[in-house]
Amino acid sequence: QVQLVESGGGLVQLGESLRLSCAASGPIRLIAKMSWYRQAPGKQREFVASIVSSMTNYANSVKGRFTVARDNAKNTVDLQMNSLKPEDTAVYYCNLDVATTSGYRGDYWGQGIQVTVSS
Image: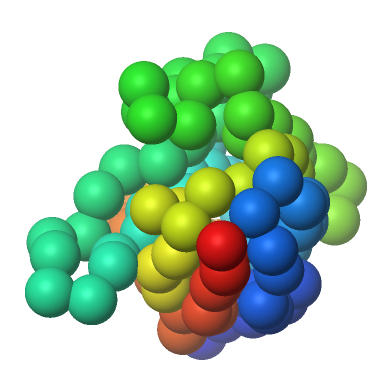
């Protein structure tokens, strides 16, 4: 069973930084796309950032402030969040496109981690 564990969330003030991490474990053969999403109260889950190989993609709202990076040897993906704003407050989820050693391929989600930015 593939499992994802997120860490690094918390409460920060306007303009501060946080680094989220997502670690995957289990029968993993390959992780293609690694992504971060977020969901604010009363809103739909939205895309934040993704990385495929070394190619990155960002939502316009975080471009220039957030950086996504992956470590293929450790099966981890990090999200460095700088210049945080109150509108970044949300539960953040990692999402991995995983091919397992048994031949299955699918999307896996982390449990979500709270990020709160106060003004």
